[in-house]
Every structure is written in structure tokens, then in C-alpha cells.
Length: 276
Image 1 (cartoon, helix red, strand yellow):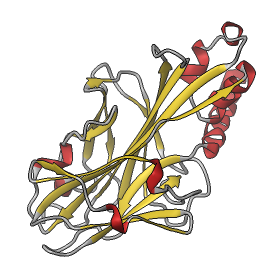
Image 2 (cartoon, helix red, strand yellow):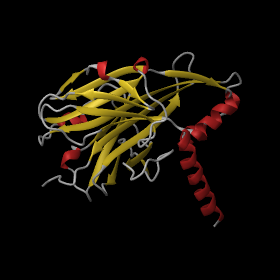
Image 3 (cartoon, one colour):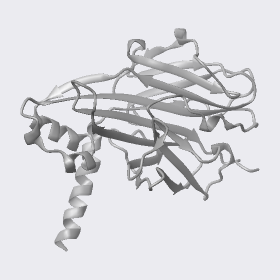
């Protein structure tokens, strides 16, 4: 009974701790558009449902749009901050599936060894914390992090392979199927890749658009772990906008850095009309 209570307490702490994280998500204002119609990418820096602060153009490392097997850079003239959210107007060319990616420049910070341990708790990184030895960092810990958000969009009814395109980001999440073909009730698999290599045993959150904004953390999202091939699967339970998110932090081999973190997310729409 004691172990059960302890496990429940640790899980509660992990969910509460994730509330402090500012993660990056991109989703489209329209689940689908007609040919020639623009769409607006909504960029949240916080949770999937609510942004805690806008991302300025100065922080952008890359913004790419993949469609028809080709990658291009959308016009950033329309990138703007609307309150705490950033927005970008995109103009997909022709019918088909497309993929938009937003990657930020690396941010670097230094904390005392004790502060860094608390940071790992706050950021919901128990695997990194389990092997972290504060005594090895008497001068403090220097770490960097980058955020890579991708969103799958659709023009018309033609489904294409761009949903699984690589944008060259260090950490990417790729679906096994085009979400436009996935029906409610089916299983959907995905894979997490670091520099093109599968990431095994990684904690990953899967969730969908909430009925009301989530103030912090991952709300009712499901926590999964990838297998030896960096893959995991989940049941699609509702026709909404879904997201997958993970934070991969490892010791660094770069001079001057002790740890490096890549945060990745992917959003996509599940239509109630899929397969009809």
C-alpha cells in the first residue's frame, strides 16, 4: 500500500512539475483548406492549449514548409505576435498534405548544481535526474535547449507523403500514417528520431485539444515510452487536433556545455470524416 501511495505521489509531482515548462507547439487555425486558400499557424510557447509568451522572429532558427516533396521557406513578413501567441500566415501550393516546422535558436543557461537538480524536477525529466550527480558539478551546470515544433496541414482531399518528411531538425517526431486516413478508434504509431536515429525508452506525451484551455502541464495527456526502435502507439479516441511532445536531455560532448536538451512536438488533425 505504501508503494502504491508513493507511486501516486511521484506521478502527481511529475504532472505538477511539467506545469512550469514552456514548450513549443504549432497548430493551424483551420483543420483543412481549399486549394489557393491561406491558413494561419498558431504558435504557442507554453502548453498546447495556451501560450505563456510569444516567440519573436529574432529567436527563430528555421521555419520550413514541406509540400509536394519539396522544402521551402515561407515568407516571414506575416510573422506577428498577438498577445502571448505568435502567428504566421502560410500559403500552401495546390492540393495535398503539407508540413510546417518552426525551430528556435539555442538558449544557454547556468545554474548551481542544486538548482539544476530542481530544474530537472520542474521540467519533468526523471530519467536525467536519476543519473544526475550534483557532486560532479561544483562550479555549476551549463546547459542549452532548443525547441522544434512541427504541424501537419491539409489542402483538399488528396493525401500525400509530406506528413512524414524530415525538416532536418535535431529531434523529430514522425507519424507512421497520414493522419487524414486515420479513423477514430484506430491505433496510430509514431517514431522519435534524434539526428535520424531512433530514440529508445523516451518519455513522450500524447494529447488532444482540450475543451477548455489548460493552464499548465499536459492536462489529461497520456504518458508513453518509446520501444527499442523509438516507436510507440496510441488509440485515437476523438476527432480533434492532437499533439505529441517530448523533451530529450542528455549529457553534452560540446565544450562549455554539460547538458543539451531538444524539445520536439508534432500536431495533426483527426477528421470525423476520415475514410468516408
